[in-house]
Image 1 (tube, one colour):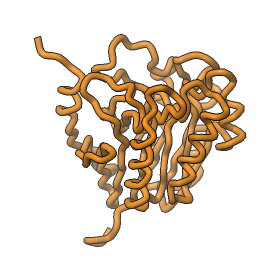
Image 2 (spheres, one colour; image 1 turned 30 degrees about the horizontal axis):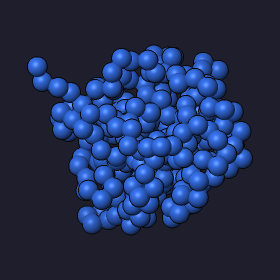
Image 3 (tube, rainbow, N blue to C red; image 1 turned 90 degrees about the horizontal axis):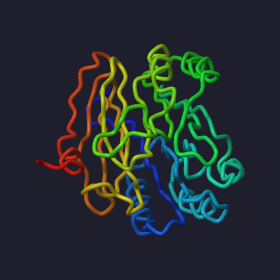
Image 4 (cartoon, helix red, strand yellow; image 1 turned 120 degrees about the vertical axis):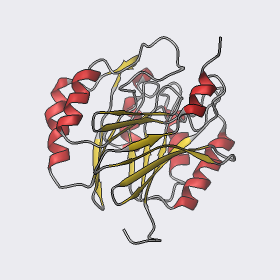
Length: 268
């Protein structure tokens, strides 16, 4: 990539929770405005669009997401969306609960990790071959896997109950497929890890006040310059800070999660 050339940008939003008592429309409206200013190449929404999976909540989420000016949109349901048979409304308004997007050398495979009316998630062994096939179908400089639930425990989020049930097998599947980056939400806390040659990054809630510790609503922005990937969290109205940067060639990385850790832990 030439000096000064615009990076490939991905906006990653999650956990909108439209319709709930802690939903803040102003936060989502501001985030949408900021995302549109970024002119992202891809927008990813990793679930919990709603609070109870009701039709009117889905319709509200659709109205908001329609305001994002991007033709390449990836969305999966979250555990809240799977409540009250809400996945029926998801399919009516957003289409398939799992999808594949390929754009400019980036492949995104997104999978529904929810179970009806349950908070936990799983990928399911019946999907592993399909996932690997999608990533191997065409060469890609960046391979991204999207789900709602987290594959690794998130610091500062209490007793661990909702890591994907088949996380071990799912991670092995993603490593075999040569995936570079996993994006998810669910716990409302942004964080980043490197696991072998796989980078796993969560984002917080973009528009809910169901917050842990001193965290604030946020969304993530992924910027790709050739082999270099940089991921930042952005707070609607309040600026941004980098979470992690890494190379898809050498897998060298630096992460900047100390501030997040201070927001969700105590001393003593």
